[in-house]
Image (cartoon, rainbow, N blue to C red):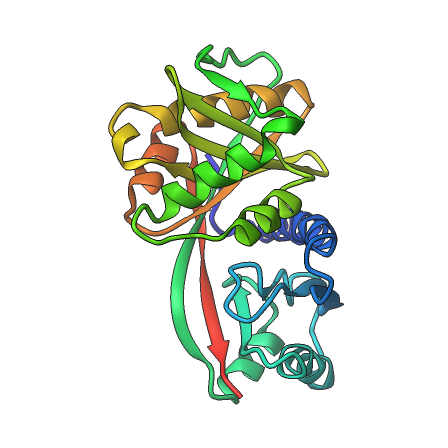
Length: 262
């Protein structure tokens, strides 16, 4: 069991998240030239278009106190790009960051539970042959699957497919299904930490256990790569939250997603 008061663990998790977001931001620039990122306060701020789920700051205040002037520059990074300032804040961030946010008109827009699981070298992790690694020529197929899984009813453009394929270029990806893929997920590897994300299942494939199988396949791959920790961010009380708990993940802290509009 982890201690939810372990600041060293929280700092490691946020640092891995920061490293991974930088890798994704560098990748998205190949498809979206106006995308940008810049380090602030030990974390990183990323712009990938107003309204993009990638547009936010993460890892801020986990290494040190952050001067007010630096946080104001971070706000300018977003404001200069006609975007609201979005911060995913770890509750164990330095009090200087919390004080700054309290002094400004930020509002809470979402909560995310951050879970973790140890990976040991001798652990036996069961995998399923119906979960297959995504080959380079299947990148767009994977992106279409994930976009459909996130919202079956909303149309998406070919540009969105290309942007997602470029963004996930540094990630390892899997698809699961019998004759045709019905679910998919991705993983990043940073400093011995496996980051799980991108989980999506088509409506027709739900309640078949695909997400559990995708979790186990990623755990096995992370184990082979020598990772000792896996982390994931999920919506509280969601089906994904329950599936990750069943796979041995434990809640470590809740990130607060904050937004300031200009």
